[in-house]
Length: 275
Image 1 (cartoon, one colour):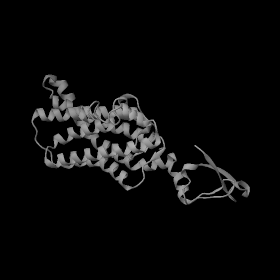
Image 2 (cartoon, rainbow, N blue to C red):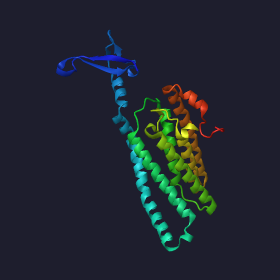
Image 3 (tube, rainbow, N blue to C red):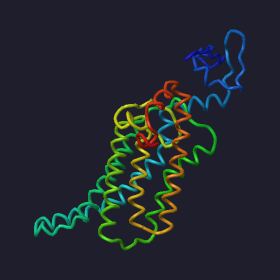
Image 4 (tube, one colour):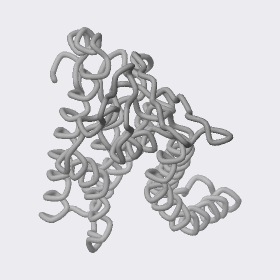
């Protein structure tokens, strides 16, 4: 990355002028360049430098991390109750242990693991190289992330045993696949459209958005448990926002990594051979 010398008189040690280097791609129109390459560093440029620090990134991720931790804590009592119930069945007569109870416990444990992995990766993630500007990409990212939460606020529905088992299997499969995607994405994870590092290993060798695929499958399983028009509406909105997030992220990745276009040509967006 080309660099310019930044001269700020009277701010160095012992009152002397100080030479500092900043990336030229963050010097905006408001900066004035003097002969010899010296630049008056504007407030907007200073804010841009701060935005590229790890401390800023931690503060940006803090609300989401707090929400993930809160969600995990809320699930713990229910998981503990189901574990105790499964133990009781095993100690008395394991032959009558309901499959739905076991699958429900597995689904909750998978969700807890997913939340824990997300918290860890958001805390350790890299600083973005490039990010989307404007309100719309951010709104889409936030809406796609939180809108599915509205499903659990709906009144529960009585389901047939087979439909309930299908919903649990979808939740388990989608969440487990999402965990695998997050572990591969690792420190490059983000909610907003941002480019940290291009990941092409693991499930990313086949599709470009395995995390979104896992989340949509898991959300479909959740919506089945609240089978009603409102649940299907929220599921549909969730998917619409997720598709728009994919497009926004691909634009940013194309800007940050020119070879991303070749990767797009070799992979499907969600389903190999279909889409």
